[in-house]
Image 1: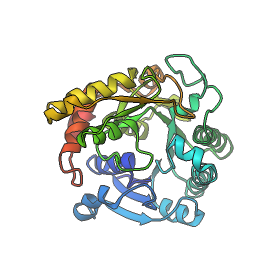
Image 2: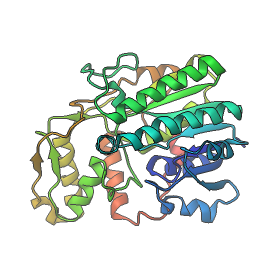
Image 3: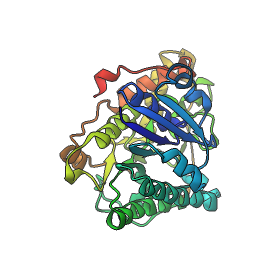
Image 4: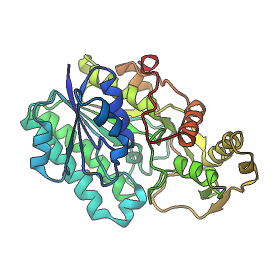
Amino acid sequence: MNKILVTGGAGFIGSNLCEYLIHKGFEVVCLDNFSTGHIRNIQYLINNHSDAFSLIEGDIRDLNTCIRATTGVDMILHEAALGSIPRSINEPITTNDVNIGGFLNMLVAARDCKIKRFIFAASSSTYGDNTDLPKVEENIGKPLSPYALTKYVDELYAEVFSKTYGLEYIGLRYFNVFGRRQDANSTYAAVIPLFIKQLMQHKSPVINGDGTHSRDFTYIDNVLHMNLLAIKTTNPDAVNQIYNTACGERTTISHLAELTKAMQSKIDSNIASVEVKYRSMRLGDIPHSQASIEKAKRLLGYVPLVNFTEGLEETIKWYYSDGNHSLLTDWNKSV
């Protein structure tokens, strides 16, 4: 059994990864300081999988904590970060400390503990002001937010550690990931859980801008699949690379709002009369985002498992169910 450290393992993506990997036969160590993650996300694993799951409560800004968590593991999935563009604009120093300082600590720990492979959450925000569609890994623009800058620096650090110390890495540029366990109550909640929550409360979803901005919304199961491919690949050309992790589709925010409203109206007919509202654009946002996934297909064999509409349906079902217990997907169907 391979042992994997998941940093940020109590967060949205991290907790899904922890659960997924355990059901794939891995032993998992979770490192989290619960600044944005929640114990409820991993309580099921603590209660039912103590043989394969362990929790270390700690901060990646502390190098000794990083080394302690990394000792004895084979690979690292580094998901820990402060992941919001608005938060980074409001708190640039903290964002830098966590996303760059913490990332560097994890690289040092990986180097010193002789980790086999360092897989990390990169971001589509790295494309910055580049307007080309679809987004191709080699062509990026200038960052539009402190968050975007930190995620680009992480990619550069990973490359330097690979060339200097021989550390093997794979960076996954996530595109607007959504799904079960995404926090709808955070001050910096992402658009999909926020819209779902607002409609559940019969409140108007509010769109930043005129609604024509578009995103490559990526359901969580596709991210889990991509991480497993990154763990298992034996293709020497596939490592020390950055990959888009997405569906290769593009959905406008207006269409997202109307589709979410239509789906939830089937559950609660009162939602049909809720008005969608608009306001001014948000600072730091890019107009359009759509990934090319050709590189991931070619080098890792990646094919999206769940399209946007299917993922949105599953996500809405989850928010209307008891979201605090484990809602296991049919993992065997996934990979």
